[in-house]
Amino acid sequence: MVWRWFHWPASMMAGHNFRAALRGGAWRIAVVGATLGAGQTLCFWESLHTLDTSIAILLFYTYPALTLALDRLIFKRPIRMRAALCVAIILLGAGLITLPGLRGGGLDPRGLAWILPSPIIYALYLAANSVLMRRHPPLIGAVFLYLGLIATFGGASLYLGLDTPHALGIWLLVLFIALGPGALTVTLFSYSVPRLGPVSYAVIANCELVTVILVGVLALGDRLTMERATGAGLILCGVLLQGFFRRPNPR
Image 1 (cartoon, one colour):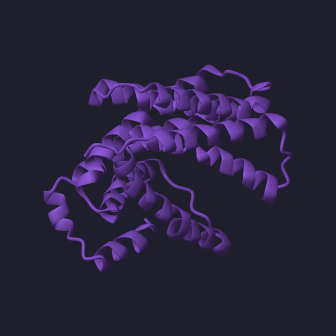
Image 2: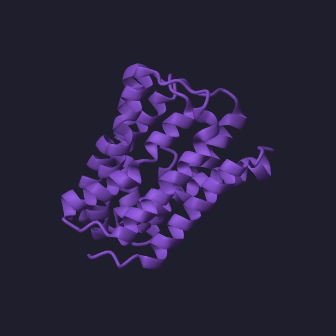
């Protein structure tokens, strides 16, 4: 619940009215967070217990293609050839990035059972939030989204029990992550998804794979292989093509 020390005061300082937001349907964002948001998070992390990380990442990052299909089925928007090409380029790039890990990874049935629903749930999560968050300021969307997540994971923690750290350094690290990257990420998500639409966001969000490579090479001493460099280049090409040809998201 540490995130509330950032989002809630920031939203109040911005002059947002939570009661008016509730009456305006912001509670639906919390429902999406409590169901689809918590579901995709649970599926992905549970899959890592028995599935190789590279396989889990590759299967999860099929969600741009699924988002494109859902955009056609739910919103009845035609699938443009350029968007399909961008998604195909990004999937190829993700495959090259995760290829070294795929060579020695095993396909555990339990891990597959967890990971296969994850990209589908995440695509639905993007589609729902792209509609619901248009009606509210980004900070309102961020607050209600995480209220839903806290309701699910907080309830599960109370029921199943929760291991809490005892060292002060760990608590400070948790506080930093919650007030810094955590709060900033969900606020930017609430701002960008309604404006970009689910497809464009799903494409652009693949830049995080490139970021992971850069952090690994520059900060952790990982080796930059030709496969990873090519994969990162393909992802950037796909993102740039999508941004160049993207049309404004209809409101």
